[in-house]
Length: 202
Image (cartoon, rainbow, N blue to C red; front, side, top):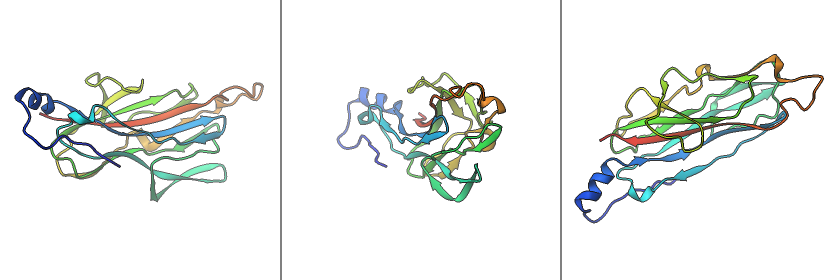
């Protein structure tokens, strides 16, 4: 994954003050697209005004591979992926999904960590956010979701994995997800996207 930083010639004082408060946003997405019982993973990366970033650090949203057996999924804890494809979603089941934030230790200063969750799951599909994350309006959502702040500071030069983002690492599908009398019920696609943001602490 590529990063961007501002380095080189000495900057005017006003630019230095601007740089000190700039947020570093390197975004990887954990996406879950479901159309009926089919799913497709999409990975995105975005940079917001990367030329103004004062310090660099790499942040990724990863998860363990979901393995299908007998119509049910389990997580292969020995295999880390950037997203999963769910080809069977059964009513009345828990779907294991454990997105977490990985920091590679390249952060040069301390940061605050935020995650944004965008989802348009139907009412019959539920989840809860991990207890280490609190809803906040300190950072506006960039993708139409809800932003949560991690309750600890991310220290400089520390390699770490941070989670769980989803409490219990499960998304629950209720028995009412399907309607035998109406095959079109909940047949349209829905998404579950996780974005991670590092914001430099002054």
